[in-house]
Length: 146
Image 1 (spheres, rainbow, N blue to C red):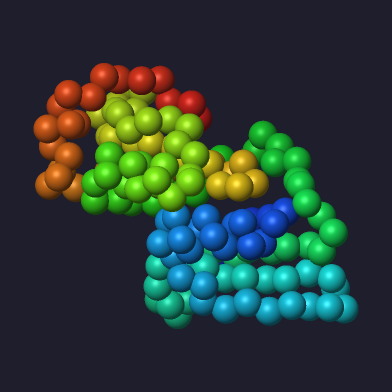
Image 2 (cartoon, rainbow, N blue to C red):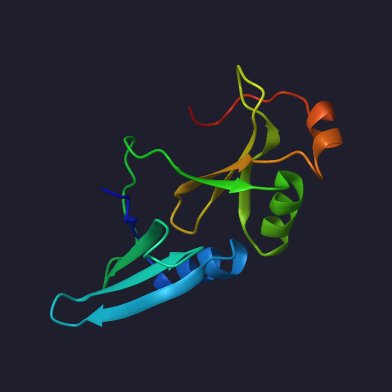
C-alpha cells in the first residue's frame, strides 16, 4: 500500500490553486469538472502522482465555506530554510499564523501557515544550512497546534 492523496474541500478553487501553486510552489497535476455531480477535482503536488502523495482539492459548486471542525490537524511540509520560506509566503500574500521557532517542549524548528479556507499547514525545518544561526537565536514560542 501507498498513500495516494489527501482530500480537502475548498470554497474557492481559484484562490486555493493560487495558494498551493503560486505561494507554496506546487504544480497543478490535473483538474476535471463533474457537471452531473456539480463538483470539480484538482490535484496538486510537488511530484507526479505515481511517485508522491498529493492533495486533492474538491470544490463543490455553490459551497463557499466549510466548518473545519476540531478533528482535522494539519498538512506538514519539509523546507530547507524555514525563515526564508515564511518570508516568501508572506510576500506572496500567504498568512503565517505561527512564526518560525522551536516547537514547544522540543527543538525542531516549525512554523504554521493557513490556506484560504483556514486549513493549517505546518512547515518543518529539514536542514540547517541557511538557518543554523537563526535556529540558535530563536526564542521558544508555544505551538498554536498540538
